[in-house]
Image (cartoon, rainbow, N blue to C red; front, side, top):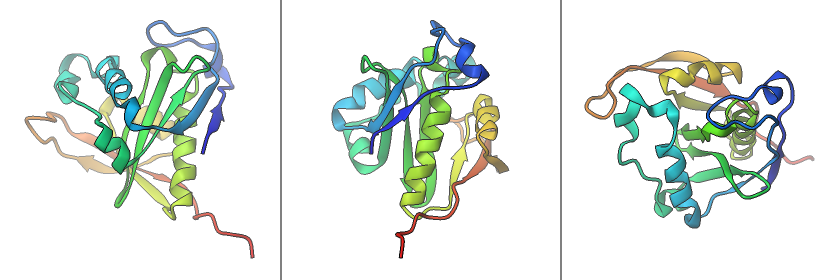
Length: 179
């Protein structure tokens, strides 16, 4: 499934992040392939959301070809094939395992588009709700796209030194074929 993402509304006109463009990028969402692994890893490691105290969380983190082949990983790319963001949806149990948007594409609707795409994929797979264990600074974003906070996941040193919000994104009823 390939989708188009275009940003609308106030966020599209407001650049955010390092090197943000002044207009929203058109993006195509497609299933990631093993050849995308290095690009996805670079996007994670370049994320300014994981600087300072959060840096240990992604130090040495790698998205390998085996991860991409095992899970539902989708990426958003601009017309020039520049990577704008990606997500990984696990189905058993349903969880948004990874979601990153390039710093330069933040605030332009890419994240919202990826969440909408993820909801469609979850519905098509028969899932009605997706768990999100959020990076603390991203909780506001997830709540803005309809996630509900359901709890807190306790810190798990040494990898994760802080508590994280646990949220649920309700995706609606699974799609059914017309009679």
